[in-house]
Length: 246
Figure 1 (tube, helix red, strand yellow):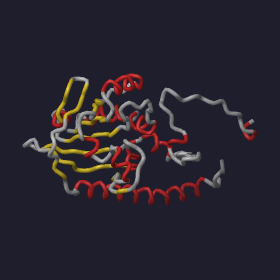
Figure 2 (cartoon, helix red, strand yellow):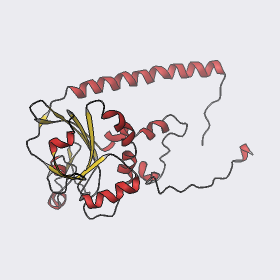
Figure 3 (tube, helix red, strand yellow):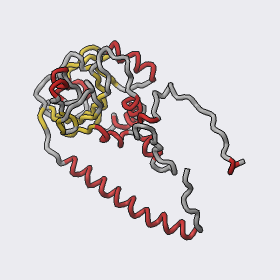
Figure 4 (cartoon, one colour):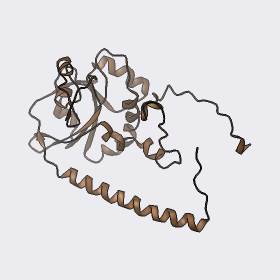
C-alpha cells in the first residue's frame, strides 16, 4: 500500500482542519437532500397486498405494526433458487441493531422476498437475524415495486429499475421502499431507493471509508462482490509480516 506524506504535527493539524470543512459541506448537503426527499410527492397504494408471515397471512396494513411509517427492504431471493445474495445479506446484517431504535420512533421495518416462506425461514435462522421477513410470493408486490420482473419483461427488455428502463437479466433486484399510512388507513409510497442507494444502510462501509485503505474493492467487480461473504463463510488468511515491520 502507498504510504501518504508524513509531516509535522502542526502541518498535520492544518491539513485535517481544512479537510473538516469539506466534511461539513457534505453533512450540510446530505441534510439538504434529506429535507428535499421529505418534500417529494406521494403515490397512493390501491392494492391490498397479502404476505406470508411466520404468524400467518398478513395484509399490507398489518406490516406497519401499528406505526405510521414502514420501511421495506427488498431482499433478492427468487423462488426455487439456492443462491443467497451476499450483498443483500451484508445489508441485512445491519438491520437488527437499527431496528431496536426504529421501532420506538414510529417506524416499522420489514424485509420482503418473493421466495416462499419455507425457503426464507431456514436462511433467516442460519444467519441469526431477528427482523420480520415475509414472502410476497402470492402477490404482485415485488413486480409493482419494480424489483422483480417476469420472463416476458426480461425477454422483451421491458424492465424498469431505479427509474430507468433497460434490458436486465435478473428476475429479482434489491432496494428499499418507504410507505406512510394515514389516520384513515390509506397507504402511500413516499420514497424508493435502488442500486447504490442502499449504501447508507450499510454501516460497515462507513467504518471502512474512514480507514487508509477505504473499501479496498480492487477485484474484478470493483464492488462488494470482490470481498463480501456471508458472515458465516469468511475464512481468515494468515499474512506474512512485511520486512519493514520485522
